[in-house]
Image (cartoon, rainbow, N blue to C red; front, side, top):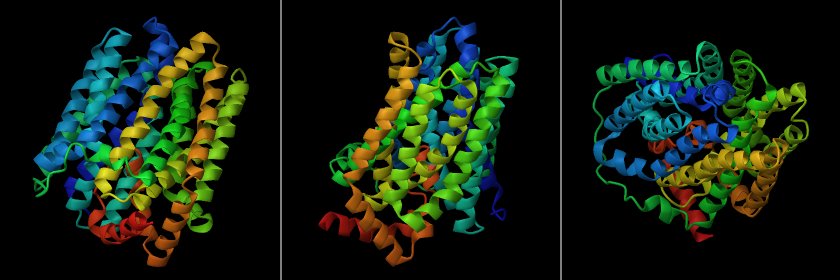
Length: 427
């Protein structure tokens, strides 16, 4: 893992900072609400603008990278993140921060759609080592994001935004200097390819499952900090514990469950447990210890679901991996973006218990949608076991869950995936 060129470590460092952004703002949500005189529903738009723009941008990331190359796409994404995270820190209103978070989402889509591909292409220490390095960067970023956000947010709510800008600027400079130019693909990807791919029932089923799951997930992520009534540092430690569990069960727990029980049963269990946790949060929103316990425990099921859902998408989709990843990312990020906004309206109209109960119902709906695809998941599991490519297929799927990285491991597993697509198309 560590026998890689400096360019690989430069991109890996940028990945750590990028994945920190997932939970970076959570500890400062109450502070933003109080200091900028904004309601929780207004603050929730930080998630909505970021994720909706990321969702829409996912439709075009392959189109861009297939025309200008991976390095230019990567550098462009980093530059956009630096500019808009700094502007968010300089902003004096909640509407300004929401707008700049939207620009941040555009940069994030461009960056994470190509980062793993660049690491694999630049690696000299072996394909497997590059994947492990990437997953280590992802886990470190997810776990450290809330803690860094809490520590910087304790000084000022502007701290996390400026912190990301500085760290990403360092990563940008290192990437420009150390990373060699990457070739432009010979066959550009059509802009319409991801939307056309959703005509396939298998891909649409998994995408809708992820949409309803993300509705519950981002309801929790966007609204759980308020009833906890903790300081920024305390919230940082709560979500640091959550992030550690997400990272561990994404990389270590999910593959073991999949190997023992299969994809569908493991997902039923993870989604069911998550629905129960959301319901408990909704029922015991005013009980701080119960709320904190449920939020931290949700890291287990979030990690399992993130990996296995995305892996399933790549196994059952009858279209090329980059196209499937973009289509899937578009649908699921829409759910994640709209959920905090809807949760805010529900909290304003009723009370803070209702959004979490609705989130639990959404996750139950996700289980219902997934059941309709049980046979295709069982068939994909059987084919993966027969081919002996299970470890290769799981590798890097966590990266896909947080934004794509399409095509990164195609050179290793695409022949086997192509065979499965033909089987899926015939059935």
